[in-house]
Length: 160
Image (cartoon, rainbow, N blue to C red; front, side):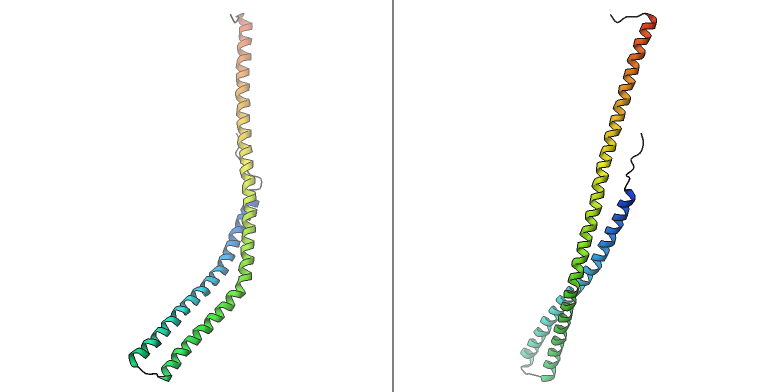
């Protein structure tokens, strides 16, 4: 019996590589977006900590020091500006992320189509192999019966 060979195996491998490349491209943009979102969360946490520190300073010292409060405010403003820049960058990345996600979905779809074709081809191969085996068994049985009948006719035996 011959070995199964999918005629479009090379095309399937190319589509698998294209899918891997699409996954990598999508992951790179997603990683940038996630890093910016994480940075925003860290900025938010630092802003909360700064506000807590400012309140603790007031509670402990019972006084207002303009220089210290200016430093607190400058820190908070810088963090808010950083968040704003991050949000702008996230907004810029979103269309690219959507595009890469769409390309990934299409690459996955193309690969799955070929995999289904390969599965169907393999099922047909197995069915053909089973049919060939059945035909060989039938032919062997027919040959045995024919040979047996021929032997009986030559020797003059009968089926009683």
